[in-house]
Image (cartoon, rainbow, N blue to C red; front, top):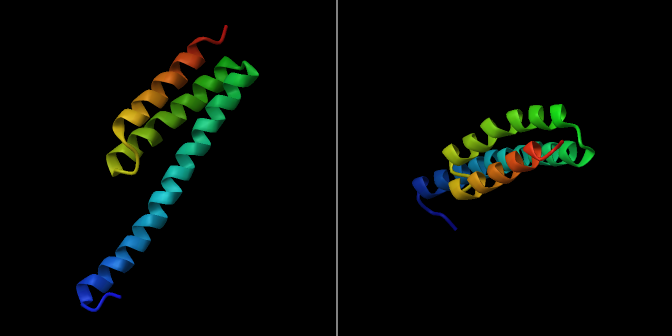
Length: 87
């Protein structure tokens, strides 16, 4: 158990950041699922719109350090490729 004031503050801060990070990752997953659902339904306009909404959120996740940049680059590349493949 933490004894020093700084260690206690760190625990409080870490719990608060964990909540924010969890919400951020959840929001990103939801946006990615919307893109995948639009691709599965074959609606190119909806998929492109969903992808446009997901991209900045994914980039923000990288900037905030909750996701690795290569992971996001790979996911974004695959999503873009799948949206462009819709006839």
